[in-house]
Amino acid sequence: TGRLRFTTRTEEALDVADVAFICVGTPSRADGSPDLSFVEHVGRAAARHSNESLLLVEKSTVPAATGDRLERIIALEQQSLPSPAKVQVASNPEFLREGSAVEDTLHPDRIVLGVPTEWAADELRAVYRTVIEETGCPVVETDRTTAELIKHASNAFLATRLSFINAVARVCDKVGADVETVAEGMGHDARIGHAFLRAGIGYGGSCFPKDVDAFAHLAAQVDEPFRILEEVRTVNHQQRQHVIDLLRDELWHLEGKRVAILGASFKPDTDDLREAPGMWIAERLLAEGVEVRLSDPVALPAAKEALPDVVVHDDPLAACGGAHAVVLTTEWPQHVRLDPAELVATLSWPVVIDGRNAWDPAAVSAAGARYHGIGRGRR
Ligand code: UGA
Image 1 (cartoon, rainbow, N blue to C red):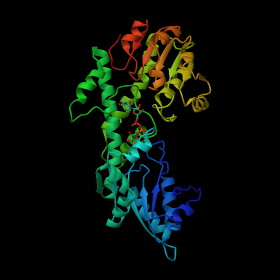
Image 2 (image 1 turned 90 degrees about the vertical axis):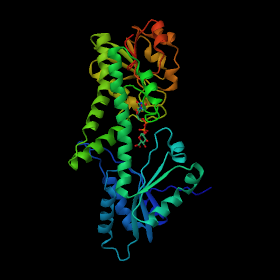
Image 3 (image 1 turned 135 degrees about the vertical axis):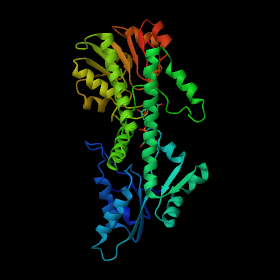
Image 4 (image 1 turned 30 degrees about the horizontal axis):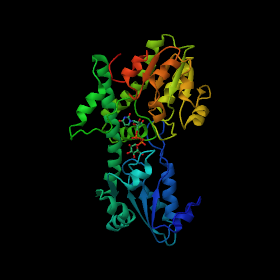
């Protein structure tokens, strides 16, 4: 309907805006703290180029009290201006997932508004009016710092659930229990719920690893070390390492072996390779002198660019041809629905590591392979 326009000029966008969302990246620095220089850059531009009044909204994931810093930088930037615009800063964290961003935006579980004034609250409620009316989703209205904390705590809690179930999975493997059924049994408790209890080779992506680091960093900075989060990170890392250990156990010397890896992206429905377990495993295997064959329905060009020594195959079965083991790292439907008999028949040695518990262990074993899931007991 002609209501969406694009520009590379920040001033042009700000000039017509009543509300402006900051959606820039906040990448991790070496010490785990997020680099907020892009956020500052937008704050300074908003201070200079807004027209009369602007509500500047943090959408990027930022540490608590970033809104206060933005306010200060805007005041400094406006010192020398003859008639500066009135700029207020709000926080409106996003909870959308890669691969389902539009659906999550139009049907949110909740909308969080961290606002300094009634005016800011009214402006943001107006932006979301249709979504609120159509979905009836809860709106949590609070102060800015609390809103920033809600985002940190939500991602950190989800990552904690994942590391918790992965730690349970490791015990399951040792005692011969099945983590899938443990998770199902836990999930029926309404207080626990089923979501985010799928054990596997750990979380990746640009959000959980970065946000867990950023929250741990913030807690340490205010002298309240958040030790659970350090353990969450450790367990997540161990899940990847576990695959290397399993391969070493099965193949003995890794050098000169051929391993097929199915899945480069950190999860299905995205081509994002950031912190992807499949890429980490591929890199480690290459360093051990393994011939790594990688297959992924969308991320192969970027994967090849990042790791030029991998051999890439569009067809997952071609990647497995003559391999000494296959590792399922991303549960793309194309990988999940592979016929176990066909898959095992292409392998030179029948070793199958199912890093996402996506294949039927009985069917893979019946096809003659040694099957390892995550927390499904040794078979
Ligand atoms: C995550 C959150 O889910 C969003 O709510 C949040 O807005 C977003 O981060 C963000 O901060 O921007 P996303 O990183 O896109 O979204 O991906 P998820 O679907 O949450 O998956 C994260 C990782 O957890 C993936 O590697 C996935 O394979 C893994 N995962 C997820 C499991 O291993 N088991 C599960 O049960 C669920």
